[in-house]
Structures are given as structure tokens and as C-alpha cells.
Length: 153
Image (tube, rainbow, N blue to C red; front, side, top):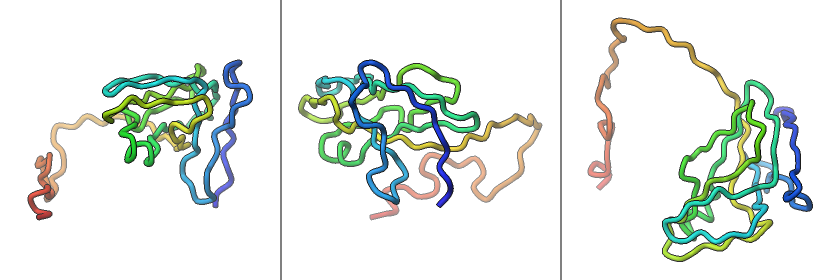
């Protein structure tokens, strides 16, 4: 296990008394983050759920916002821009965009676990524009070319 990376975190006034993001188990990759508001998301609806937190992520890292699998399976609640990215230079409130793909309105209470946060290293790219690319066995084939659902039957 590597040493943890320190992320500075600020509780906003509406985030006081809430649990900080935390790992549910020793092997968890993501930290559960909770809602700082009570809201209901109608079927097909979206809402940026407040967490009452802002943070200073170290340069060279991002925090990815990912859905909770139980909410997705049982209720159709997910993060539409999965994974969402919080950049190291953002200092505003962390809000989690949730969408309800279920058939019923989904109530969220203050303190409910709504998503997972994963700290991840970032490598920035630089472009090397060329006239031709090297050949591969796959070439330009895409969108199901390596095997689709028909091959699974």
C-alpha cells in the first residue's frame, strides 16, 4: 500500500456536521461522499447535488467522481458524465451531477452517500503532429469491430 496523498479540504457552512469522504473498506478505491442537501430527483431528471465541501487537489492529480454501484443497480441513479473530473486548480464547491434513469422519483436526504471519489494521477499530453501513423492489426476498425453482442450468443 502506498502512502496516502494529502488533499486539503474545506467544509462550507452547509457541510458542517456531515461525514467527510471516507473509504468503506480497507481495499476500497473510492471514498463515499455524502449529500449536503435534501432533494428529490424525478425520473429522467438531473441535479447537481451539493456536498458542502471544496478542496485543493495537489498538482498532478485529479479527483474522479464515480457512481455508487448499488444506487445504479437498485434505483437507476448514476453520474451522467462518468467519471466526472475535479481539476487540481478548481476551488469551488464539489457538486455531484446525478441523473435518475429509474421509474420513480428518488429522494436524497442530507447525509446520504451519493457517489465515490477516486484520487488519480494525471499525465498531460503533448501533440506530435505527423503525416502518417504506424500500422496495427486493427487499423481503423472501430465501434464493435473487436466483437459485439452477436459473437457472445
